[in-house]
Amino acid sequence: MRHVIALDVGGTGMKAALVAADGELLHQSRRATGRERGPDAVVEGILDFAAELRAYGAERFGEPASAAGVAVPGIVDEERGIAAYSANLGWRDVPLRDLLGSVLDAPVALGHDVRTGGLAEGRIGAGRGADRFLFVPLGTGIAGAIGIAGRVEAGAHGFAGEIGHIVVRPGGTPCPCGQVGCLERYASAAAVSEAWASASGDPDADAADCAKAVASGDPNAVRVWQEAVDALADGLVTALTLLDPRTLIIGGGLAEAGETLFTPLREAVHRRVTFQKLPSIVPAALGDTAGCLGAGLMAWDLLTTTDRTEVTT
Image 1: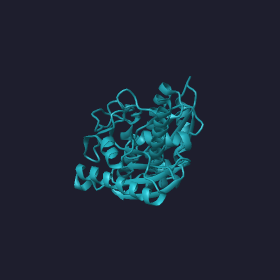
Image 2: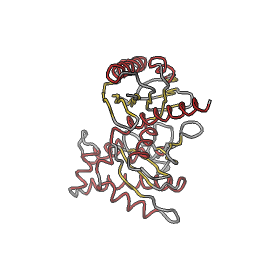
Image 3: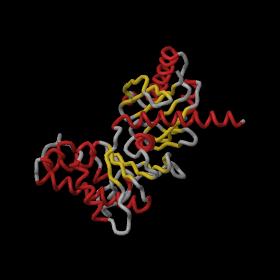
Image 4: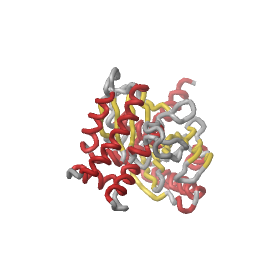
């Protein structure tokens, strides 16, 4: 059976699958990145994992994977296939596409983790059928994926969609990026966790705890939550003014709060728009499988392009 390898590399763990042409997940596996051993060990672990997946596919389905798609965090040069930088994994300028291509003896597509997840949400998830969408996962940080007609825009230099670094509170909290007042310093899951730990006096409290306290009517939690929602709405309105998406997909840890997030967020965005058209604001549908599914889509896209070129020539 013809299949591809899909690999989603996170800060601490890797998710992988063998994916059939119709999108069926034929095999799934997970393992740690081993980042505590350093960036070289992480790269070695990725290559070993990919080799094991290739061997499993060859044994189970009678042939090795025809291609692979790999999603990684940080700054990614998708055109050249280079994992340029990741603060969490510690690597710089890793020619990951070529390294994997040598191990797998197959074409490899390399993508940014959020854009790859956005590709899956746009094609087969919450944005299915939308010609223009914006996918915004609210996790440790905030990034975005700009979906246009079935693909995700990377930008001229690979930085498209970095909505987390829109300044929403000038003169506010310093951000590791060098600016002050960035959206992700106010509306990420990490930012809400920090704010609620301070407000509640519990250093172990996190964003999920804050959401539960909001649902129970705790006034301090409501204040912390609303400040985050207002900051998020300010950033999203800037994005929708520039991009005019038909669907706005919110994912990540904060989205797990459900209507505790989405009801006030929709209201806050609605209050801020004037001439802009309101997009549908919906929760992501694929959860933590989005990156892996998107990596599979990238691999099949690569094969479709290769097959078409071979037929033409």
